[in-house]
Image 1 (spheres, rainbow over the protein chains, first blue to last red):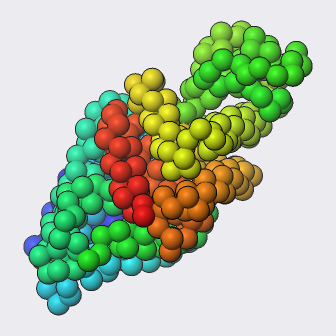
Image 2: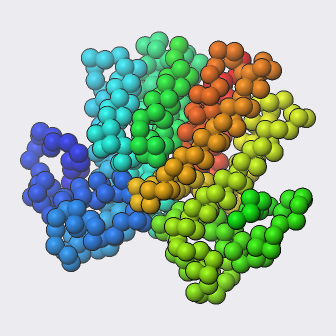
Image 3: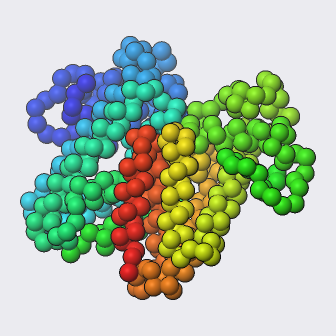
Length: 213
Length: 213
């Protein structure tokens, strides 16, 4: 699949995608619909018919594009990981902001993203991670790998903040990045459960208190 | 149901339970089996037949004890909440330890509990909270209520630690307790995904650093 799949926002500018990744192409529509539905409900609770219905595609067309629901799930993880890595890159590389401001910007954007969907949709990787006890084993490495990637991007931003004097000098930024993602996934879970931003706000505030110089 | 249901440990001493809560009684066996299976796999992925099989009970016997899978789920939440509230009470009321030591003891016990099941089983409330987008609406208040209860018990222990000079004087212990449970659920999720204790250890260490005087 294309690595420029849009998720919840207008398609980016740049090299024109191949046909199959045009927003209206069937496979892309399935992936977009899958991400929307699975960020809300997870993997196990969603049937192929619900995904087809969300994508406004006819019954029976799913297996024309994917060999199995599992294959579809792995594709969704990759698409979501890619979408999210670009999002992190966009925030963390914004040279007009200090590194710690960039990190705050990302948090504010993630919060706004949840609010936009009335705190119904969470994190695909968190949802599937929680369901791992009931998912095929190949999902595990893929999901772990996504967290490692996000943590590496975050650690880089935190190190830049440390170099700029915004974060305590004695902090281990790799550790802090892991701490952040561990707790942030818990906060997203809780925000969905409570249908409100309190857990996100309180976790972010606590984390920022912990790290600041 | 009885409020003294054992989960993963020997039955406590005290007033003898009614027949239906004896460890071998069918309804109790279903609840115990349900907690074991659902802490690993969540609600949506588990069918009634799997629960009956884990409880070593005959097909078709489920509806003799529960009206529906949903009613069973709500019973499990109550049983787990009760089991866990007693666990917290046991650790947090241990007068032979300082308050902060009690908090550490609880964390060590929770970690040992996950290790005992090879990091396959997590938190029932976290699992179902994550699945809330696909669960019946009455589950939401019940799950939120459990978190509020755990947070209140934890805040009380942290306040005692603060009074004993073990926690920063300016800390808001109610907020810290919420921060802890938000992040801890994320750590449990991650420990299950990684099948190891690293996320638990790192989150606990970060949190203890944050709060200590």
